[in-house]
Image (cartoon, rainbow, N blue to C red; front, side, top):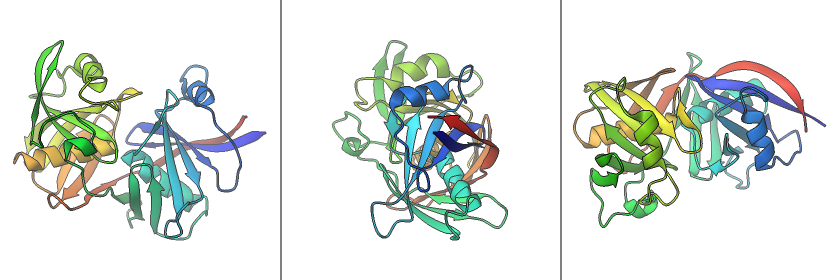
Length: 276
């Protein structure tokens, strides 16, 4: 059979998006990994699946797979592409779309300026909910690595994040420290690692080393986690604009117990069909 798909991106974080509402298919991890290859396949950071909901109060089920075929809980840039995909493909006429994910429910809203606003839900800060091995909850933690002791914030946005404050993202050890922290034993389900440079209380820069992918041009949940970490530590204020290599996201957070709101673009690159 030929499987229809779209190639999309959110600030350069790119995706293969597949409609499994009107199509039927089973996608093994090996096949996803083959398609993710940028030389012999389609090439993408993650595969996004649009599925019928399993709960009556949801519009869709949203599933995310990394380039290595592993399924993950959440992806903010992917969520914006998901919303644009279901509207542009006339799978819904709604402008406010409720989706279920492995990391919990999300509300996706299309704005009048063609951007997508995503209610990412409240951050999870308790170590057991991230998950992260620590005796008690703290604003920052000291973690021993082969490159020395690293001070970081640990936050879950439905998926685990470590945020490291740096003087400059241009010289940050993203490709060396990122892999060490991604698989650090204190993060039992691995972790996405963000390197945050604060420019002012309303403006920051960020690079992210994503688990199972490597450094990407943008990470929506990573930007959310970075905003939360910066606001908690008093170096950022809401709303804050965060520049990633692929572009800018706007984050809003009113404090513990409140949802993080992310607003940014979602773009279609091309559509096609591939044998399955």
